[in-house]
Amino acid sequence: MVSVPSLGTRVVAVGMARAPGVANAWTARRFRHSQNRHHSLDRLDRVAVVLQRQKKLQTPAQRVADLTFSSRHINLLLDRHRRLREWYWHPTCKGLIAMDVTQFNVNELFQKSIVWDAHCGMDPQVPIDVNSLERIRKAGFTFVSTNVGYDVLPWHDTFPVIAGYRKFLSQNTDKYILVSSVADVLAAKREGKLAVSMDIEGVSALDGKIELVETYHRLGVRQISFVYNKDNAGGSGCHGSDTGITQFGREVVREMNRVGMLVDGTHCSPKMSIDMAETSSKPIVISHSNSRVLHDHPRNIWNEQAIACAHTGGVIGVTGIRLFLAKPGDATSNLDLLVRNIDHYCELVGPQHVGIGTDFAEITNALATRFENATDYWPFEHYQGAASLEFVDIEVFPQLTAALSAKGYSNMDISGILGGNFMRVAAANWE
Image 1 (spheres, rainbow, N blue to C red):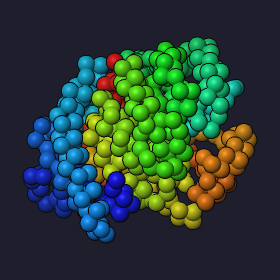
Image 2 (cartoon, one colour):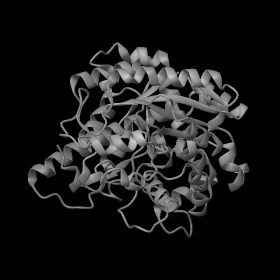
Image 3 (tube, rainbow, N blue to C red):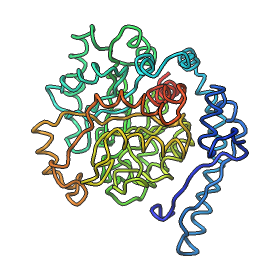
């Protein structure tokens, strides 16, 4: 296994001509994309990738391991990018993705785009956190996936939370739509409502029973992340052993592919998320994880993990917990830190593989107490107790549109990052 922290990896498109007067290849790519909004699609069938080491490996064994990693993933990348064209033009998404967003100004773009929160971190308890849900709706989001269970709580507690959401959503159809397909998301956009889906963090919610994958799907769960920080029956977590995926984990991936669920590599160890990407026959997501290259926190991900996700045609969601954005005392604004992570991922894997997973929640007493006590899931040396829980306000995210535009991103890129990219991957999995 590659010693991931010893690597700094970046993806470079070979043979890309520079636009006149443009300073670097990434700016050139943005320039060309703004001239032809289908440029990135046209490039997929002839893309070539090189992995450039930014740090020297220390031993011959590491060099051999790294060579194996590189060649294997170059081949995977080329294969998956050929398939990405098909996912881009999935019948359900084709009309929206082909929409000419170049006609909109910066102030209109957030309102006109599908805005997709791949995961919010509301406490999975009954009664449900209605206040956070309403703030997400009022902030202008089209879709949110909300947590209904995670490994920290007993697996059977998930069912009352699902029941609570289903009841609330059925009683408030003037504001919300329970999602079963991408068509529901498009309907929510047309009707000015918030489309709500459910996700689970950790396969402990399956209690070792593969049959529960389909049961959860029937109840409205459309996304499962396999571990929650520490190892479980599915594989290794970001605070665990890095042994990778288990046989049970592989079976869960295949069953999720079959029933139509998003496979989520958040909270996973480096080897685990790469194993998940290699196992899945459909695009995966890493719904809410920032770059560990920018901020070395174990909950963030290395470049290799982001690349493996993008190889599948998937998307990485930048997240809004301050602890995962910067060290304590850093005076950089939340908005600038979010843009910094988006920039990093766009340069690494391309803007079609980047999105938003806010992890937003209002902190409840129950959540704060659990955070203090469950130190096996939140080790104190990395989380410093409940005092470290600071969420970027959901109202900050609409400001991303102007911030990204000011940095030279095209309307097509921004609209994809806001939600079009995650919707593309959802269509490839759910339909």
